[in-house]
Image (tube, rainbow, N blue to C red; front, top):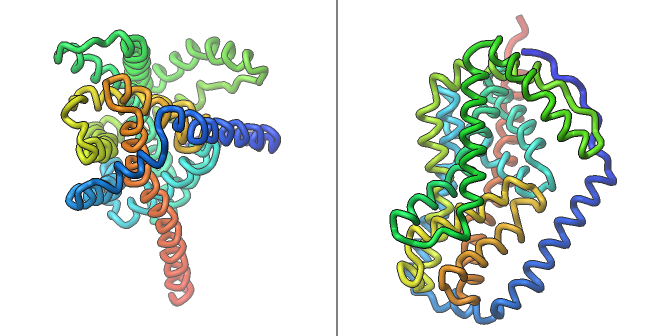
Length: 353
């Protein structure tokens, strides 16, 4: 495994500015945009009027999401126990969705957690990278699938076609790039040389020195190649399940609010969900708070759901899917700390050879 080049820590000023921008967007959405659609009082009245059994179904959907989420780590690392996978994935979710621009920090956090649970460093790096790539492909690919399903259903796709086409192009290009990287070290080197001018141009736009991406691609090919070739099917199945369980929460919320399957169909709900989640690819706010919510509400109302009901559905979705997983992430860090202390005690009690 090649030693990564030390990077300068991010400017504190830039971090503060990013956090302020994210906060402004969240306040603008929840304090000004949503009230313009419908009052929170009406939305909460709709929530409180739900039958008790829908509350149980929503609870079950939220629990299912939490239970399934760690399976992606087990899929990419054969032999990894559920406990270690749970800590790895839930702690990573917390970091990436609470800290502005926390995706990179989450990668380092997961790497450290897996190492603590006995996963070799090379395998940890490859596993975290492969899991992140599969998630990225799922998020970008589902809008294209949604548009295809809308066409099959005979619905208009004019408002979504551009986003779906862009997402599909990126997915296809990414898959081709991954395939080229995994073919051989020489292929990874050639890909790096061809992409370097594009990377240099992009970094020049933001007035930063472009990194040499060739060593990174070669390192990824060496470390993750065998893993991705042998584990692509479990990775695909578990990542698809992890991406679809938050959608189950949204479907249950819409059904509980009596707007599913009419006026919105399952395909339309899936289209709204997948297109809104595209905004998580742009970490403007932690967890897409505000940006994803605004997009989801606008898309739901575009499909004919009353404004206040769309706001209520989004609030339920956040309260049942997002908030519990954040709290579980805190618990995962506590479990990690407990396991680390127990391991240190065990090591200190072993006789010195």
